[in-house]
Each structure stands twice: as structure tokens, then as C-alpha cells.
Image 1 (cartoon, rainbow, N blue to C red):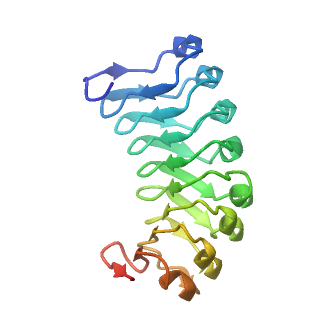
Image 2 (tube, helix red, strand yellow):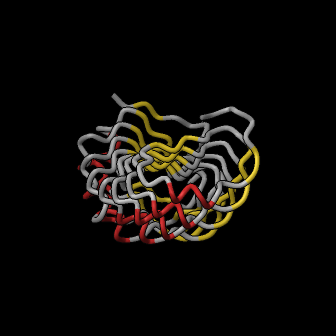
Image 3 (cartoon, rainbow, N blue to C red):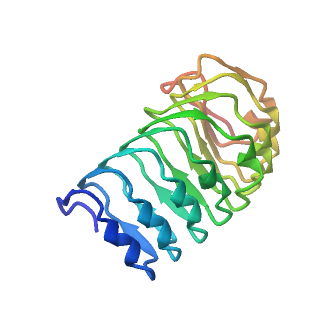
Length: 203
């Protein structure tokens, strides 16, 4: 369901829906935290809670959802550090966490525990710091990377050019990132590096 003007918290009882595969409550007025009981719904494959007012940390129990393929939490008020368990979901294909208040750094394990990841989008109002993990080159199925408007530092790995399926790379607003990514520019179809208003199209 979406745009149904739902209000209030996500009920703890949701954890009793042990055969639920898709949870979509987008563009409503949900508030509060994700219930830890959500981790009991081991059949979940797709979670879409975009456009609500949910807050708090991303629960460790999300890491229990071993079948989860798509996680969409765009435009909420989630904050705090990433729960490491989220980056151990080998089934995850798309993670969209744009426009929250998340902080901390991208884990080194990012490139080693998500073999099926095709899209990772953690831009917008988040506050991710540190460097882009070199191991990201191991995510051979990546099609899109979105890390715009964060606080990343260091060098954009030249090894990103080895990701043969990569089509889009969004790093706008990265004043503290150095570009050592000539091979990337030669392959990727659409790149935003210097600023969110500066697009470099490469053919």
C-alpha cells in the first residue's frame, strides 16, 4: 500500500506475519522506529517504506532477513551508524537509503559480503564519512552507485573502472574527494563528481 494517508507506528505484531514477502507502505505518515520484530519475518524479499517520518537507527535485526533483495528507506529520518549485519545480506540487490540522517563510514566488508548488489544509494541528507572502500571493486554486479552530498574524503578508486556493468556514478558535492578515476570516466555512461549541478556525460 502507498499514499493511503496511514499514520502512526509500524505495529510490533508485524513480526507475526511469517509468510510476508513484500512490505510496501510508501509516501504515508508513519512515525516511530522500525520494530525489532521485523527481523522475525524471514520470508521478506522487498521492503519499501519510502517517504515517511520513521526515525531511529537501522535495526540490527534487518540483518536476519536472509532473503531480502530490495531495501528502500528513502526520505525518512533514520539516523546513527549502519548496523554491520545489513552488509551481510548476500541476497541484497538494491539498497536505497537516500535522504536520511545516517552517519559513520562505509564498512570495509562492503565489497565482500554483498555479491548480488546492483545498486547502492546513500546520498542526499546523510552524513557518511571516511573513504570509499577499495573492496567495492568486488561488487561485480553493480550498475549504480549513489553517494552524493556526503562527507567522504580520499581518492575515488581508479579500480571502479573494473566494474564492467557500472552505468551511473553519483558523487556530487564531494569537495574533499580526489579523482584518480580515469578508467571510470572511459566506461560509465553518466557521472556526477564535482557538484550536484555538474554532470559529465561519457560515451
